Image (cartoon, one colour):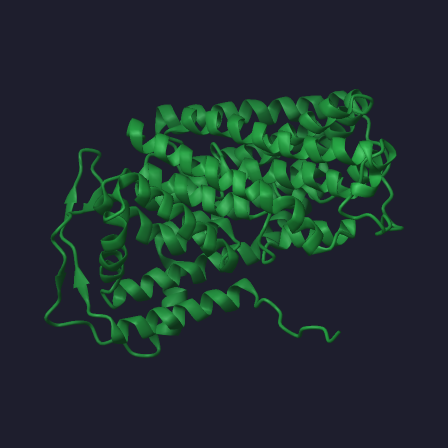
Length: 462
């Protein structure tokens, strides 16, 4: 059978193509604007029924396709987010260098290894909370060999081990409480108070976690009872799949983990009580980097190198954010973004508030196939979805919720997600076998997410 030569283009290629498409849209769509009013919170929102076509539309040069990108990087809000991401990336690297992550997971495995259900539940909970709070994802890849070795030894299979990580991570992103790469960025773009509606999100995290745990454990029990039912039956465990050396949990590791938890509590308090945003949060993560390095016994030069390496790992993310922002820049230059909003709003308004919210969820899910970067997707879609929420009669908070559902949950389905494909490749699991496990879970998620959005509309989530 001839192998297909088709390859999914790099995210930057897709986004640059969308910048070009945005320019072409300015040539064919009528320029128009809504009137905007300042709401009680002091934020601008569109006024329904005020859309008008402009008599003198802008005439953009083709060079706009290129000039919009550096101009987007120079936008103050974009620069703040990019540098915040660099700081968080640097912190993650220092945090990993302390060994506290490896030691904490190793301790969890030691405690629960002889009780498989609680091992599955405990590990999934750790991955879900890590993704929900500080946006961990790639950091989970080193645990794949450990979990595969353990679960295979316990009579399960490689799919069970990967499902524990990926479904935990997907639930954590989809129902994220304060993920700085998705929720906080999307709320900032939408003009919503950072970390607002957090209680509702924590409830959703618990609900989706239970759904995910049930899905994984149901499969795991079936494999335990009959190994021939495994989705990877006949596929050998990768020969190099050996667990790294066990990392003991030392006093230094405990202190590092306590410092992280305390910092997250301080972060939540600062956002809610003091109105902290990117500058203050970046300062906190910088200070936390120094603190965990001291507690972890890492020398200053090693700390600096780890921080730089961690920031460098997120260079692609920073580029994606800048190019994604350029799409909005071009549409704004051509005065057609309100035209797009007006066109999308018409069918959604016919669906009612609840139907519109669910429609946004489906649109965001499709977008994640082409823009697997959560922060990049926020910059592409939220400038449209936020004012669209005003027109269809739902809060912008609900638009943010629809975005994070669409982005987060589909991370563990779409083949354009580098983390997912990296994990599957490492574990030796063919993508089609993985889809057979994960697609039924996604159906459950799409149903539960639609119900959650309906509840959010019913209670008037702000």
